[in-house]
Image (tube, rainbow, N blue to C red; front, side, top):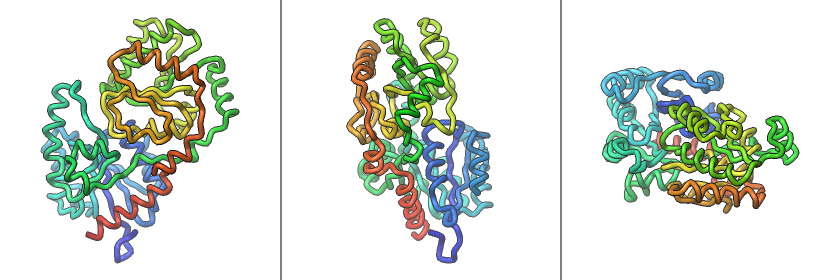
Length: 369
C-alpha cells in the first residue's frame, strides 16, 4: 500500500526496449490493473514506443535513457534521474544487463533495488551467450531483492540457492480479453478470408531467439501435403525482411500473412487453430499463456520451461527437424482441438486481477524493509 505517511510508493520500471515484446507487455498488464492510488510507475525505455501515450494517460511518466552498451553515459543519465526523482524502488527488467541500472540506483541512494529475470540463453547465440553467461554473475551485485517470471529464468540468472529468495512475478494476463465465442471466431475468420483455412499462428519479435525461419521452413514442408493451411506471423523486428525473403524463396507468399502487433491481439489468437513457438530460449513466454487462455493447442520448443503448460494442451518438440514439426502441426490441426482454457490459466496463477494485488503486496513489503 502507500507508505506510513500516506504517500505513493514511487517505482522506476527499467525496461530498455519497449517497442514490443513480452517484457513491456507483462509490465503494462500489471500497470493496467494495479491500484495506482498506492503506487506510482515511471517507465525507463530506450525511446518512443506504442505504449507511451497509454502510460501517460494512466498517470505514469516515460524517460528515455541511453543504451546500456554506452555504459558510462547510461549510468550517468540514470544516476542523475534516479536521484532527482527520489524513487523508493528501482525495478530492473533487463535480466543479465540489469546491473547497469541497479548500479546507477545504488549510486543515487535508492534503498530498494530489484533485479528481474525475464529470460535465459542458448549456446546457439554464440558470443552473446558467452557475454550473458558472464554478466549474470554480476547482475545481482547491486540488487537488494530478486524477482523473475519463471523458476527456469530465476534459477538460470541467480543460481538455485539464491533463487529460493526470489519473488515469482508471473506473466499474468487479463482473462476477460480472451472470452471470445465460437461465433465471433467464425466472423473473424470470414473477415480475413480464412473461413476455409487452418491457421498456424505465431506472435513474437522477428529475432534470433524466436527461431521464425525454422517455423517458416516447417510450414513450407506442410504446404506440400495440404492446401488448406495458412501461416500468420504477428510482430516485427530485426529479422523481418530476412523472413519475408525466405517466404518468397520458398514460394509460399500466398499462404503466409504478416501482421503487425496491436493492442487487441486477441483477435489474432481467435484466428489460430494451432499456436507454434519454436524458440531457442525463453523465460516464460506470455504468448503461450495467452494462446492457452484462448483455448488453442500449442506446439512449443522443448527449450521452453514446462511451467508454461497450465492446461495440458501444450506439446514440447525438439527444434532439430522441420519435417517433424510439419508432421506434428498437421496432426494437431486434424485433431480439431478446442477447449476452455481461461479457468485453468486463472487456477495456475496467471489472472492479472489477482496477481496485481500480489505485486502490490510485494512492493509494500520491499519498501517496508
